[in-house]
Length: 88
Length: 416
Image: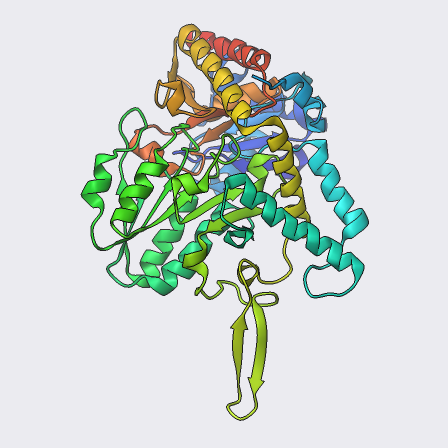
């Protein structure tokens, strides 16, 4: 599995911490979200606005538009390794 | 007031778009504005009918494009009440305009130990060029601080200004807080000290009547894309008497009147071109200049005073609703509506600004989140980032209502 199978774009957001916005491919969105949710270690909340979970102590926000906000990463390398795990 | 936002909206094709199944609500105007069909058509017309390189060609097409491009300079000069088109230099954007000053005046006229004053409210585009110059020339950059309400500490100007202060550069309006600074006062105290004044007018020229003679700054910078014009075109206003003996920052075609090779000395002698062409080296963004001219004509037709008053009205409406109906929102900046423009920075307790922006995006509402290229301002106010809404003439109260309803839903989420 390659990240690009599920992800169309990654943007680093602006702010104090290194947060990333991962945009899922629209045709793979549902499958990708299902995979990510299956890795949930802690559900912080689940609402119509967005779902916030924790995986490996990282906060992951899932939006119905297929955008995922992943917080407090050290950099792109850590993000890519993290994505490989949660999308496996 | 003679501004009908619903009628204006008809001129903006993009506002008919849906995002994520909802009508687009565009509240990111401090970053860039949408373009009316008149501007889009002016650019299209140029490429369809007049496209040719400007200046010195004798053929008809070139003369037509030259006339339009030069006319764009006249239009900008009139719009800001400059003395002459010779004071209007087209650049890429505000950032390039400020760098332009740094690499002409800054590089050539400043010496080690000279000082430049900027503010903690500044966009990075008015901080980084001076830090670069600090490294090259050994000058010192000093910073005016902020009060907790996001206004400048005016008393610090008098404390920091001294004989070594050569330039004072500051924003007319904060791109984060919307604070309107007293440009006339700062220009006056700077000139009393014989310091040059640079005004970052990126957030003011598009939104209010602007009179460069009244402010009396030496330089002003603004971007076309923030005032309904295309990207890649911006303006540097530079007082003629300062630039007259200045050599160009970018040398090349159109910057010179002639270059004569002296066979005996084996070197070229140069006679510089007239203002402003001396500072517009190489083929310029001709279509951009023409698009900017059309944008200015569009704004003038509506009236800058009308635009200012309308933005004030909807900003006041948004601020009141946010203050009265949101319990967890922290709104930054001055309370007095006359001291601020149509920009509102805020946070909602329990959420970071990116979360707020991503939720609004689901409903087709475009706002900005993060530092807005003003990290020192956020450091100074001790906030990690902020969400920012910024209005323009096509926004409506109905759009604000829709946003407030979503923000209320976000607040409910934090109560769970």
